[in-house]
Length: 174
Image (tube, rainbow, N blue to C red):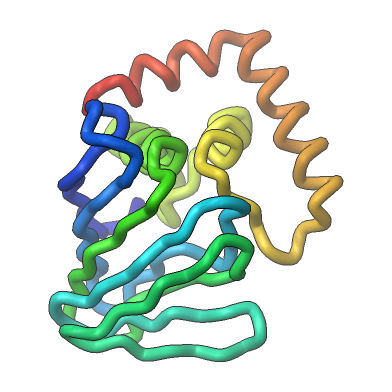
């Protein structure tokens, strides 16, 4: 990841129940997540300080300030970023959070190990294939059939080469 910080407050991987809660701080002009959706998960963003821009698939952009929140229902394309000159800190909850937590812990573990690009993307496509599959993340703009086939192929390659076991070891540190 790129200069953002995350603190897990409630962790399904640690046995805290199904809901994931974490606090995230994005630096000034920091990119958060590109447009994506979750098939079954509701995700809520509540801004504690700064300004968070939430993008929706129809081109609509919503600016949230301290004390404001938005709930994103399942199937709703969304992304977020910090448009401001100051950091933004926000609380995120996900009602079915185990997969999203696995995705986030994996991305941060790869970044800590120096295995991501400057933009925060894993250098190994097998890793991003596994993590997207775990996280209930569907990228908008990529046909679903193609996305499923690609994730399946990357997952197969990850299992064949042991990348899945290595990634599981990195993530197993809640």
